[in-house]
Length: 138
Image 1 (tube, rainbow, N blue to C red):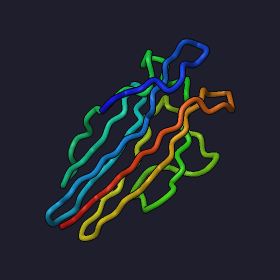
Image 2: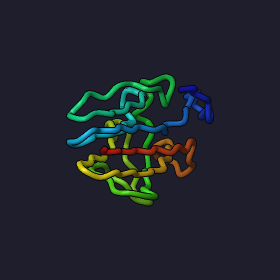
Image 3: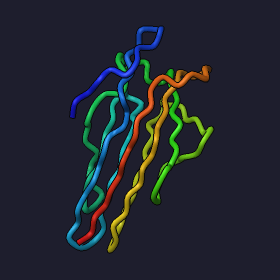
């Protein structure tokens, strides 16, 4: 996964695209897929047939200690979510980790989420990314 700088905030923070993909093909049973924009400044994904662990896939901010100064808006543009808060105008502080998941047993599912990040107390969006979650059951 290549990481590219999207925009540098005036305060010196470097923000990167927080989006990415997570998918899992399960041969029977339930597939679990998830994406986190974490309060420690990382992005993480889960791709498992059971409650598997999340693994780090990148960093959305440097220095990571400043993650709590930002908030995220997540807008679902397609598909069902099993968990995670979405909605236009629903801004969530990144002082807490934000997680979006889908799980599927017996059918294929996909969800697409557009995430926007801005500094708390401002209205200017600094970076936008897309998260695509997919489960495939064979």
